[in-house]
Image (cartoon, rainbow, N blue to C red; front, top):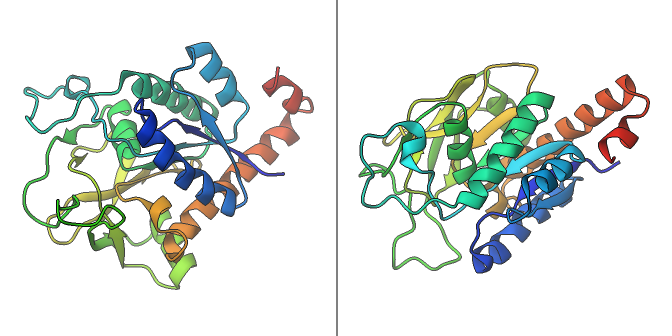
Length: 260
């Protein structure tokens, strides 16, 4: 059984989504899962029905920014990008489904920002100074800045790192963002930061029973050469398989109900 992983279309811009969505799908499928695109242009009922057939959720990156009004920002930073209402609406439906059903969730870049705001957290609208978090104008489009991230010992993320490379502590991550988590949302805790400027690089659920991990970097761009990235997707698929098996065992007609 290949667990079904729901992935919303990254953005309303067709070109961007066509270029980036395959990276997430390939990473999930290489880890043993079935990637299921959730079209953000679909109706709420159609999205909810598709989500019901999936065992986990992956929230991908996006060139959009979450509307600052959603987290109570007094002013909008000049460099804050326009929101993508369709992506926001899809994320909210998928986040609600993952929360209600305790489905595993991996949130990446924009995805972790979306998760954090949905959990009533706040964002830094634009990062100034410190580590290089955005690609410079003279950097080739297939390259991204790299910098360190220090992972908190004993965290779920530390366990993933240890399984991948045999030790926890500092890892190297890529970076392609200008915003980040500020105040973690309800039920989330900080588990990695950039040592150069303290920017939050990862959060995870405070509940040991619910797999929720959000990272500010892009593991889908580096899983082929990076063991930590591969283990991250493998762990998501493993957790999704466990979730499916537990619900199938508890409900004899589970498959019929969720596909109805």
